[in-house]
Length: 349
Image (cartoon, rainbow, N blue to C red):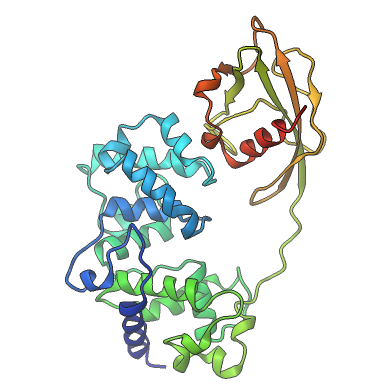
């Protein structure tokens, strides 16, 4: 298999079929040496971790409108950034963005390092993100491997070994294709190919620019790849959430500890998430359980929350949290699971 021919065919396809993305420089300009804003590349790559492109598009636009440059983000209020991040999940990413921006301003003159090794020294930037920024923002010949690229490699080379065990082999195969020139376009072309043609289900092999080189297509195995080991069932945890409202409409909210899930996010007071949660009302009151429950899936477990509501007296002193005036409350700034709690609470009589 001639890897140079594969790369040529891939870039030819990308030149005509590249997705239009707000953080991306189109291939026509990229070929002329125009590079994307490294801040935009970094931000988009962090946002896209475990999140779809369509979900990220509007959030990216809002984020860069509010903090248009790395220096603005470094000076941002953490609560504001966390609120803007609400709904994207994996909230440690938002805290790491702020920390990383601060380090870049302090130690790198406000400019992101241009090498993978330099990027790896920054908070919240791991091997994948470092390679992606180096390749896409600075055209360094780095191999960028996400889930889309793993799928393309598994099919292109007909790799039968299952994921996650095959990850290292798939990355090595991707490295054999990484060019010295147009490395950023090459990386984005592989991502686009996996996202639009070499899709998880029903790959459109007839439209694929690499079909003539694809070993899985030749052997009729493309739709079955990549193979995956069966995942263990997610454990189930339960918890209690309390939505309290004073007579003046103010709502009782608390900021979670920075460590752990939803760290630093605003939400409803509640119990620990265990197999058998212990009631933990944030203030004495006539708490009544709402019919139904909130269900939410995290990476490593499934959570079910029972929701309790109460009308609280104006002079009550909460043991946890603080009251937020109704005019200052914005459910959109809550993490997804807490928005689900609010939606269920609103159904209470």
